[in-house]
Length: 193
Image (cartoon, rainbow, N blue to C red; front, side, top):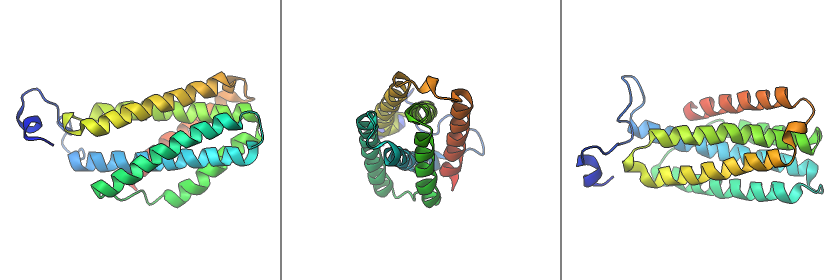
């Protein structure tokens, strides 16, 4: 953070709007990095599971492209965790298995169900990144810009899922609702554990 950002009137800093008992600026950043790292790890595993089932399907190149973007995001958060000396979530082994299972399970239901899973997860992540951007002040401009960029890419992944007939998947509404609930729970847990 620069001295100008600390002293300039009207400059928003991370944590300025927190209430008593809310995490401080350092903990806000740690939670953001921890959960985003976990989320990108989980997303990569979801795509690994989908590709294990649909690797020869016509939709496989699309899934691979989205998986490549998630790996780029994961590499960024790997670096940021190291630079900021933030520990990753202790739940990583669980997300390793759960992400793969979710990806493979949705793909076993067919390509539309795999895309429904993708659209649901990415919708929640898009909203999650937007909420994080609002928490960050001018003192975290670089991180805020990274989250804006990644949020736009997640939004695009959601659109890709919808373009590939996610909404025509059998049981789309309950599948989408279940995946969204699970994703929100994973976010809450990964921020804290």
